[in-house]
Image 1 (cartoon, rainbow, N blue to C red):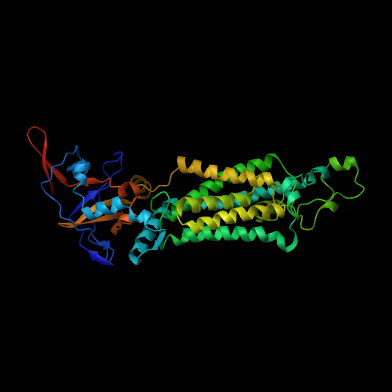
Image 2 (image 1 turned 90 degrees about the vertical axis):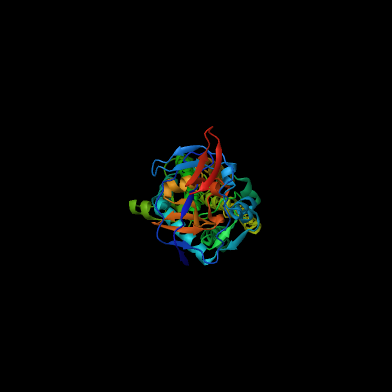
Length: 432
């Protein structure tokens, strides 16, 4: 990439409500990474246009700063304003490949976010093992049920669908792997592909992982509470109990069910080591309410629908989610109520978290949490580019890589001197 001299002046970004008018200013480095072949949006800036601004002191450098209203905004290079207003990045395509330089800069931004979010991502990963250990506890509880309570419950779907045993029992797992594979591929591809998100903001893989982790953890907490307080008899092939002949009514309702009625493959944890470290997501018993398979698949469906605006991806995910349900029920892995509950609880949790804990993708959040600051920098007298400061360096970025609040045209100007007449009215502006 072409390395340029530092821009002579910089216009600093701001949020719409002017919550933080001044980002912390750091001196420009001696070299700035510039994307080879990219337009630097040259434009002639008028030094005599009439503007109206609200001055306030800059505590760091003593310079005058002005929030950018319509008049001052007109001084932003026209080619940059046209890109912001046309918003062709959001409406023109489902996705495009990133350029080599864009891949590098986007990867560095993702890496900066990952550095901050790594503890939370590790927590959500470890929480999956905790959830697995709690399902082993549910298996122990299931083994303590008496023979009467081990008999599978009546379920309308069980009566309508033939039981899938043997090799057909795993069909739902193939649906699950397809749904997981599509979602993971989309998230990974974001490093080399610019996706057009339905919400119109740039997509960051780390933010998706953060949202996925939050959704899974909350849903799994609700699930663990549900199956620990009420133990349902398993109907799957490894849990399905057959009442032995000659069992008296007293033996049916007292004590754990006799072992001779257990199916092949029934094996509850035998010691603490099994409880803590056995990981088996498909062959457990007792962890039924509500379906863990559906929690995962619905989370992945919500991720694709929220972040990836490509019709065929959504069709594949929707068909996969619809298709997996009857095969889960036909294999007797869950009751209908387990699957139905997960189908509405998961998207509700996802949307509540989306509202209460939005992605940290505004310029304010990225500066606050990740130390990344965006500027409108002047390279030559009539040449401007957007710059992001991170990892101790500054990198030129394309307008479509900017946070939404900057992409909508809200800026903060540093180094813009306004001349005021004696009656207090503005008489002109110049770039100093």
